[in-house]
Image (cartoon, rainbow, N blue to C red; front, side):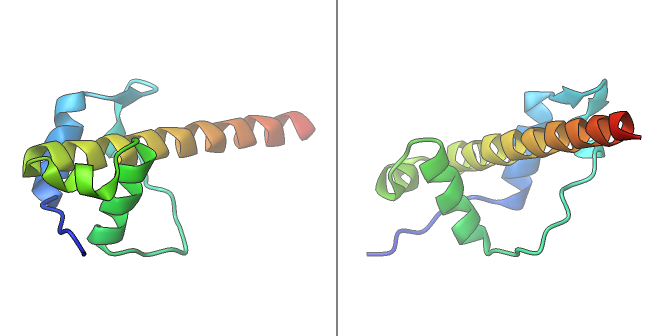
Length: 98
């Protein structure tokens, strides 16, 4: 059975703003997103977030819409922070090599 998520883009944006995350003194939303070669549907993104956060898909779908959106926002923020830190480490390494 395919359960449906009730995640919304607005809910994700509101949760990200409520988290108040800053990276190097700048709001996380103001930093660029990783440029990727992968595009995915919101449903697949929600499933990735659910499993990364330890939910089964069935458990995730029981959550209300705002809780689902907050979970997806948490996952996206975590991945973006990881990418920013890796990018900065790579830049530092490149500078040291010169």
